[in-house]
Amino acid sequence: MGRGGAGDIYQDIALCVRELGEIDPKYVDLLFKELDMKPDYEKIRYYILLDELF
Image 1: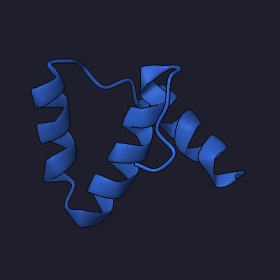
Image 2: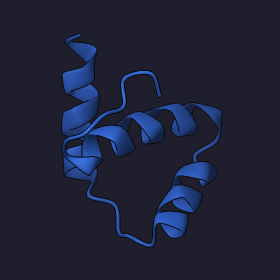
Image 3: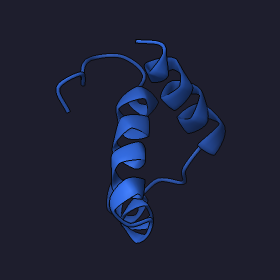
Image 4: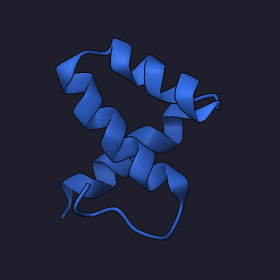
């Protein structure tokens, strides 16, 4: 999480989802259960793509 910071929470969540998904997709479900929120996969995809530009 070296690039985490203040901003849209989904920017940080997207990076977590990308990393956890590479380990095991069940951890993505667990992340959202622990955060007690429903995932917005449109935002997640956006921020993952945005991160690829850097």
